[in-house]
Amino acid sequence: MSTNETAVKKAQTKSLLTRLGLDRFSALYLWGAFMIIFGLWKTDTFLSFQSAKLIMGENVSVGILALAFLVPFCASTFDLSIGAVMSLSVALMCFLSDEKSRAFNMPVALAAVIALAACTMVGVLSGFVVVKLKVNSFIATLGIGQFITAIVLKLSFNRQITDTFSPTFQKFGRNQYLGIPVVFFYLFVAGIIIWYIMEHTPVGRFIYATGGNPEAARLAGVKTDRITWGTLIASSFLAGVAGVVFSAKVGMFTSATGPNYLFPAIAAVFFGASQLKGRPNVLGTFIALYALAFGIKGLQLVVGTDSYWVNPLFQGTTLIIAVALASQKGVARMKKRKAKAA
Image 1 (cartoon, rainbow, N blue to C red):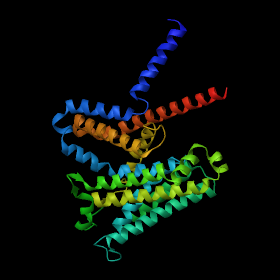
Image 2: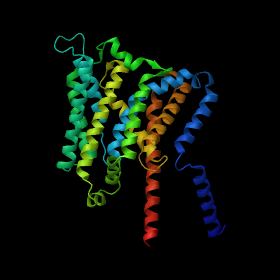
Image 3: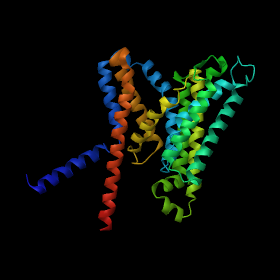
Image 4: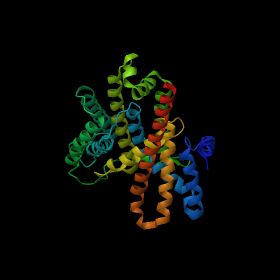
């Protein structure tokens, strides 16, 4: 086969993939494949409405945590402290509103406000370290996350905390509306708010500009340091919200609560960044989140009681593939720019 024929075949293949939208809708194709494969394999359980409700409810805190990671990520800033911040939120909620405690026993609404304020202050600290001390966000937030973990372990004495919330509060996390877990609507509302800010406000445009080319954005008048700091504050606040929602839904604390949700959240954001617009976005993140959630649930149903290894294997593989896809798109864009410049 000649070089020209090979080039033509490659171009035709690329054109077919583009027409099918595999470069922008791969998560939807994957989601559809999961529905078909596991639907045929485990028809009675996987395709039941009960399974769908479980998946929607179980992934709400992960989804809010994904939004927390997404906001600074759009500004090319990493916040790896969000898992620890979510743990801090849950621990404070349990500690401050414990009905058995003589020292506090606060109204749960007041405990939630204090927990969110404390989490927001973590974002202020992260912003100071990243912006003022010029520490790389990856390293800074990783270190701050460990610092917060130490506080949480001391606060909880490294033990499980249960039976601290009133039944009235837990109704906000365990009730259903129209047959759907009410917490799913919390995620939906949070997603709408973040989507609107990122896509339809000057703040969102400044965040994307900072992430795309911080030097050019700065020369154009964007206060990039302020934007970076603000995204880290928003990230910690959203991680705190994830903790409050988790408290209402689950009603208990373990030291693994937040950290266990960090990796699935990051995987959803990276995978979602390759969807729809080819950049980090809310809708792509949600599609990726629930595509992966349905895949994991299907594997768990197939494997059965020994499915404890499924989640980390699936999430790890997905993250590698998602980053590879994002990297390939980035390389392709760089080649196009070089070709135009030439």
